[in-house]
Amino acid sequence: MEILLYLGGILFMLVGLGVSIGLHEVGHLVPAKLFGVRVGQYMIGFGPRLWSKRIGETEYGVKALPVGGFISMSGMYPPSTRTGPANGVFAALVQDARVANDETIAEGEEERVFYRLPVWKRVIVMLGGPLMNLVLAIVMFTLMASGIGIQQASTSVAAVSECMIPAAVEQQQTCTADDPAAPAAEAGFQPGDRLVSMDGEPVTTFAAASQIIQDSPGRTIDVVVERQGKDIDLRLTPVAAQRQETDAQGRPVTDDKGRPVTRSVGYAGITAQLEYAHQPIWTGAEMTWQQVVGVTDLVIQLPQKLWNVGESLFTGSQRDPNGPLSVVGVGRIAGEVAATNAPVLDRFAVLLNLLGALNIALFVFNLIPLLPLDGGHVIVALWDGLKHAWAKVTGRPAPGPADATRLVPVTIVVAVLLIAMGALLIIADIVKPLNLLG
Image (cartoon, rainbow, N blue to C red; front, side, top):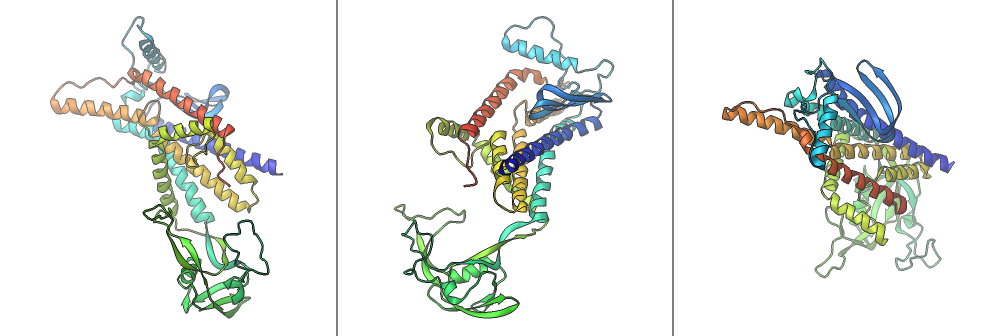
């Protein structure tokens, strides 16, 4: 059964990735057709064709390698004017790209080409794909946060510690006769109690109750709990315990000699029950923005992160849990999540969060301003618009459209680097996978 659940998690992620890629290409396809561009192909995947069907002028299909997708638009670049053989490898690559581009321009439909669109329409077509992934992420995070809810500590008691186990005894898991009773157990707390008030103050969150306990080491406080529909009065005396200080980002605080800074806080020995709390409808958008910022930071540090992945692969050092993953790594984590011994709703929420994060990665990565990524095509369109605007301001004749085929060598270099990056991450995710679930 565990193996089936593991495979089910992988299948969930593969299907989700396929849908995300498919809708990404729809984000390009729809505005292109609305603006009158002839679209010859809409394909999910690369490599050998598995299935296709022509509807009107467009062939829709699926290819063998589900690692991306594309639409083939007529006249992505202006037609070539050069004739004769090309001299040099790079010149030959440029010439081949121009010939392939010319073949997409159907006879009699020379006006239905991408490069003739106004700059703003070209930008819309190219941004349509990444924006589709952004919308998908918002929908997924909203469904998770507002539909399912986010797990939070409630005011109900899940467990009560029986005793105070000394911190120095690392292997001890159960209480002994010599261990003093925990304050909550001594006060009479029971699992299932719901906290009503502490020290005369009503409590509506476990965080508020915890703060009162932490602020009261060695001081007896009055507590009211609801038990089987009745209010029960208890008297709790938290014991003093040392707690390490953390900053606003949750990082340990140290003194000028690098030693951890601790403070004395009250400890009771109660654990809260977790429950799903439905969040406001805008929470999904807030979570999306946080993910965008995080993935953008990852992309900025990508060379260093990839170096660390390679170093951990060849030296056996610990792999950075915040580093990049391949599709293999994401699928493996999805399988592990699906196979964990947790409620189905918990597992589905984590998988949904993982798929939302994957769409954020597709959104951010495709905005990198390098061909063949969508951001590269946007830069070409904006450069074309800038040239025309400058010509208009200076009174010069309108220049010809920007010929992005000149950038084919750069495009090939970027493509090779992307393939190398993918291969490195796949090998690392197989040989030295991340263990995010502990």
